[in-house]
Length: 224
Ligand SMILES: C[S@@+](CC[C@H](N)C(=O)[O-])C[C@H]1O[C@@H](n2cnc3c(N)ncnc32)[C@H](O)[C@@H]1O
Image (tube, rainbow, N blue to C red):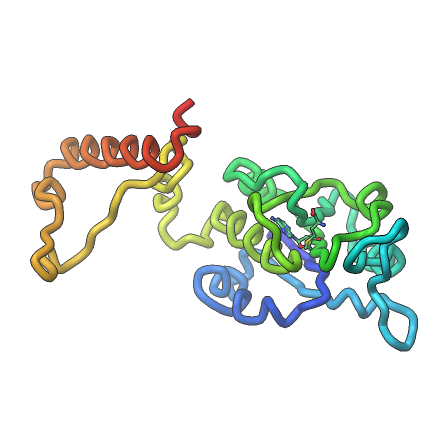
Protein backbone atom coordinates (compact mmCIF):
# COMPACT_ATOMS: atom_id res chain seq x y z
CA UNK A 1 0.00 0.00 0.00
CA UNK A 2 1.61 3.32 -1.07
CA UNK A 3 2.26 6.07 1.47
CA UNK A 4 -0.85 8.18 2.14
CA UNK A 5 -0.46 11.79 3.31
CA UNK A 6 -3.17 14.05 4.70
CA UNK A 7 -2.40 17.75 4.97
CA UNK A 8 -4.37 20.03 7.28
CA UNK A 9 -4.14 23.71 6.40
CA UNK A 10 -6.13 26.92 6.35
CA UNK A 11 -4.86 27.53 2.80
CA UNK A 12 -5.50 24.39 0.75
CA UNK A 13 -5.31 26.20 -2.58
CA UNK A 14 -1.64 27.05 -1.94
CA UNK A 15 -0.89 23.45 -2.91
CA UNK A 16 -2.83 23.25 -6.20
CA UNK A 17 0.13 23.75 -8.54
CA UNK A 18 2.55 21.86 -6.35
CA UNK A 19 0.48 18.69 -6.45
CA UNK A 20 -0.17 18.67 -10.17
CA UNK A 21 3.24 19.57 -11.59
CA UNK A 22 6.51 17.89 -12.35
CA UNK A 23 7.93 14.76 -10.73
CA UNK A 24 5.56 14.77 -7.75
CA UNK A 25 2.51 15.29 -9.98
CA UNK A 26 3.55 12.25 -12.04
CA UNK A 27 4.16 10.19 -8.89
CA UNK A 28 0.65 11.00 -7.68
CA UNK A 29 -0.84 10.25 -11.07
CA UNK A 30 0.88 6.87 -11.09
CA UNK A 31 -0.36 6.10 -7.57
CA UNK A 32 3.14 5.85 -6.06
CA UNK A 33 1.88 7.94 -3.16
CA UNK A 34 -1.41 9.62 -2.27
CA UNK A 35 -1.89 13.17 -0.98
CA UNK A 36 -5.13 14.72 0.27
CA UNK A 37 -5.37 18.38 1.24
CA UNK A 38 -7.97 19.34 3.85
CA UNK A 39 -9.27 22.76 4.84
CA UNK A 40 -9.07 22.95 8.64
CA UNK A 41 -12.17 25.14 8.65
CA UNK A 42 -14.21 22.08 7.67
CA UNK A 43 -13.88 21.02 11.31
CA UNK A 44 -15.05 24.35 12.81
CA UNK A 45 -18.54 24.42 14.27
CA UNK A 46 -19.54 28.09 14.41
CA UNK A 47 -21.10 30.06 11.58
CA UNK A 48 -17.96 32.18 11.07
CA UNK A 49 -15.83 29.02 10.77
CA UNK A 50 -13.43 30.33 13.42
CA UNK A 51 -10.16 28.42 13.57
CA UNK A 52 -8.06 30.78 15.71
CA UNK A 53 -8.25 33.04 18.75
CA UNK A 54 -6.12 35.52 20.72
CA UNK A 55 -3.33 34.13 22.90
CA UNK A 56 -3.93 33.82 26.63
CA UNK A 57 -1.48 36.07 28.48
CA UNK A 58 -1.55 38.67 25.70
CA UNK A 59 0.73 39.31 22.75
CA UNK A 60 0.37 39.91 19.07
CA UNK A 61 -1.18 37.55 16.53
CA UNK A 62 -3.59 34.67 16.73
CA UNK A 63 -3.27 31.05 17.77
CA UNK A 64 -4.96 28.03 16.11
CA UNK A 65 -7.69 26.74 18.41
CA UNK A 66 -7.57 23.20 19.72
CA UNK A 67 -11.16 22.12 18.88
CA UNK A 68 -11.00 21.99 15.04
CA UNK A 69 -7.48 20.56 15.03
CA UNK A 70 -8.25 17.80 17.54
CA UNK A 71 -11.44 16.93 15.61
CA UNK A 72 -9.61 16.85 12.26
CA UNK A 73 -6.69 14.76 13.46
CA UNK A 74 -8.94 12.34 15.35
CA UNK A 75 -10.97 11.81 12.20
CA UNK A 76 -8.01 11.41 9.82
CA UNK A 77 -5.54 9.43 11.93
CA UNK A 78 -5.09 5.69 11.47
CA UNK A 79 -3.33 3.17 13.74
CA UNK A 80 0.44 3.66 13.47
CA UNK A 81 0.26 6.88 11.47
CA UNK A 82 2.74 9.70 12.21
CA UNK A 83 1.10 13.02 13.10
CA UNK A 84 3.51 15.81 12.22
CA UNK A 85 3.41 19.53 12.99
CA UNK A 86 5.53 21.77 10.76
CA UNK A 87 7.15 24.41 12.96
CA UNK A 88 10.37 26.45 13.10
CA UNK A 89 11.10 25.06 16.59
CA UNK A 90 10.91 21.43 15.42
CA UNK A 91 13.74 19.01 14.58
CA UNK A 92 15.53 20.00 11.37
CA UNK A 93 14.44 18.17 8.21
CA UNK A 94 17.33 16.07 6.91
CA UNK A 95 17.70 13.50 4.10
CA UNK A 96 17.71 10.73 6.76
CA UNK A 97 14.44 11.94 8.25
CA UNK A 98 12.87 12.35 4.79
CA UNK A 99 13.88 8.80 3.91
CA UNK A 100 12.51 7.41 7.17
CA UNK A 101 9.17 9.15 6.60
CA UNK A 102 9.01 7.91 3.00
CA UNK A 103 8.80 4.36 4.40
CA UNK A 104 5.73 5.07 6.57
CA UNK A 105 2.19 4.02 5.66
CA UNK A 106 0.38 7.21 6.62
CA UNK A 107 1.34 10.76 7.60
CA UNK A 108 -0.92 13.54 8.84
CA UNK A 109 0.75 16.94 8.38
CA UNK A 110 -0.47 19.96 10.30
CA UNK A 111 0.33 23.46 9.07
CA UNK A 112 0.12 26.29 11.60
CA UNK A 113 -0.53 29.96 10.95
CA UNK A 114 -0.27 33.34 12.74
CA UNK A 115 1.54 32.84 16.04
CA UNK A 116 1.33 29.06 15.90
CA UNK A 117 -0.99 26.54 17.52
CA UNK A 118 -2.39 25.83 20.99
CA UNK A 119 0.23 23.87 22.96
CA UNK A 120 -2.32 21.21 23.92
CA UNK A 121 -2.46 20.11 20.28
CA UNK A 122 1.30 19.60 20.33
CA UNK A 123 1.12 17.76 23.64
CA UNK A 124 -1.69 15.38 22.74
CA UNK A 125 -2.13 14.74 19.01
CA UNK A 126 1.31 15.39 17.50
CA UNK A 127 4.05 12.74 17.36
CA UNK A 128 6.80 14.68 15.62
CA UNK A 129 7.61 18.36 15.02
CA UNK A 130 9.68 19.25 11.96
CA UNK A 131 11.36 22.48 10.88
CA UNK A 132 12.39 23.01 7.27
CA UNK A 133 15.04 25.59 8.23
CA UNK A 134 16.09 28.39 10.52
CA UNK A 135 13.75 31.04 9.18
CA UNK A 136 10.08 31.80 9.81
CA UNK A 137 7.35 31.38 7.19
CA UNK A 138 3.92 32.97 7.47
CA UNK A 139 2.27 29.54 7.56
CA UNK A 140 3.26 25.89 7.39
CA UNK A 141 1.64 24.95 4.07
CA UNK A 142 4.80 25.45 2.03
CA UNK A 143 6.77 23.65 4.74
CA UNK A 144 4.45 20.65 4.32
CA UNK A 145 5.04 20.83 0.56
CA UNK A 146 8.80 20.88 1.10
CA UNK A 147 8.61 17.84 3.35
CA UNK A 148 6.49 15.92 0.82
CA UNK A 149 8.80 16.85 -2.04
CA UNK A 150 11.89 15.78 -0.07
CA UNK A 151 10.47 12.44 1.05
CA UNK A 152 8.84 11.59 -2.30
CA UNK A 153 12.29 11.33 -3.87
CA UNK A 154 12.93 8.26 -1.70
CA UNK A 155 9.77 6.45 -2.85
CA UNK A 156 10.78 3.84 -5.45
CA UNK A 157 9.72 4.90 -8.94
CA UNK A 158 9.08 8.59 -8.19
CA UNK A 159 12.42 9.64 -9.63
CA UNK A 160 12.57 8.08 -13.07
CA UNK A 161 16.25 7.28 -12.74
CA UNK A 162 16.93 5.75 -9.31
CA UNK A 163 20.61 6.49 -9.56
CA UNK A 164 19.97 10.22 -9.54
CA UNK A 165 19.50 9.77 -5.79
CA UNK A 166 23.06 8.61 -5.33
CA UNK A 167 24.72 11.75 -6.69
CA UNK A 168 23.14 14.58 -4.76
CA UNK A 169 24.18 17.11 -2.19
CA UNK A 170 24.35 15.57 1.31
CA UNK A 171 24.30 11.89 0.22
CA UNK A 172 28.04 11.70 0.97
CA UNK A 173 28.04 14.56 3.50
CA UNK A 174 29.32 16.71 0.64
CA UNK A 175 27.59 19.24 -1.60
CA UNK A 176 27.10 18.38 -5.26
CA UNK A 177 29.61 18.92 -8.09
CA UNK A 178 28.97 21.34 -10.99
CA UNK A 179 26.98 20.03 -13.97
CA UNK A 180 27.32 21.03 -17.61
CA UNK A 181 25.34 20.17 -20.74
CA UNK A 182 25.54 20.94 -24.45
CA UNK A 183 26.89 23.12 -26.03
CA UNK A 184 30.44 22.46 -24.84
CA UNK A 185 31.27 26.08 -25.68
CA UNK A 186 28.85 28.92 -24.97
CA UNK A 187 29.64 32.63 -25.27
CA UNK A 188 33.31 31.88 -25.03
CA UNK A 189 32.91 29.70 -21.94
CA UNK A 190 34.20 26.15 -22.35
CA UNK A 191 33.33 23.27 -20.08
CA UNK A 192 36.16 21.61 -18.11
CA UNK A 193 38.25 19.48 -20.48
CA UNK A 194 38.09 16.39 -18.27
CA UNK A 195 34.35 16.00 -18.86
CA UNK A 196 35.03 15.41 -22.57
CA UNK A 197 37.86 12.94 -21.93
CA UNK A 198 35.70 9.83 -21.58
CA UNK A 199 37.99 8.81 -18.69
CA UNK A 200 35.52 7.89 -15.96
CA UNK A 201 38.11 7.57 -13.19
CA UNK A 202 39.46 11.04 -13.95
CA UNK A 203 35.94 12.49 -14.15
CA UNK A 204 35.09 10.95 -10.78
CA UNK A 205 38.29 12.36 -9.27
CA UNK A 206 37.51 15.82 -10.66
CA UNK A 207 33.93 15.68 -9.36
CA UNK A 208 34.99 14.65 -5.87
CA UNK A 209 37.56 17.44 -5.74
CA UNK A 210 34.90 20.00 -6.75
CA UNK A 211 32.56 18.59 -4.09
CA UNK A 212 35.17 19.01 -1.36
CA UNK A 213 36.07 22.49 -2.58
CA UNK A 214 32.43 23.66 -2.66
CA UNK A 215 31.65 22.12 0.74
CA UNK A 216 34.72 23.77 2.29
CA UNK A 217 33.64 27.14 0.92
CA UNK A 218 29.90 27.04 1.62
CA UNK A 219 29.27 24.43 4.35
CA UNK A 220 32.49 23.74 6.26
CA UNK A 221 30.32 22.39 9.11
CA UNK A 222 29.55 19.30 6.98
CA UNK A 223 33.23 18.34 6.92
CA UNK A 224 33.55 18.16 10.72
C1 LIG B 1 4.72 32.73 11.87
S1 LIG B 1 4.93 30.98 12.10
C2 LIG B 1 4.83 30.81 13.86
C3 LIG B 1 6.17 30.97 14.49
C4 LIG B 1 6.19 30.70 16.00
N1 LIG B 1 5.56 31.74 16.71
C5 LIG B 1 7.64 30.60 16.41
O1 LIG B 1 8.26 31.62 16.62
O2 LIG B 1 8.17 29.46 16.46
C6 LIG B 1 3.41 30.34 11.53
C7 LIG B 1 3.43 28.90 11.10
O3 LIG B 1 4.29 28.73 10.00
C8 LIG B 1 4.87 27.44 10.00
N2 LIG B 1 6.33 27.62 9.88
C9 LIG B 1 6.99 28.79 9.90
N3 LIG B 1 8.30 28.62 9.74
C10 LIG B 1 8.51 27.30 9.61
C11 LIG B 1 9.67 26.49 9.43
N4 LIG B 1 10.90 27.04 9.35
N5 LIG B 1 9.52 25.16 9.34
C12 LIG B 1 8.31 24.60 9.41
N6 LIG B 1 7.16 25.31 9.59
C13 LIG B 1 7.25 26.64 9.69
C14 LIG B 1 4.41 26.74 11.27
O4 LIG B 1 3.38 25.83 10.94
C15 LIG B 1 3.90 27.90 12.14
O5 LIG B 1 2.85 27.51 12.98
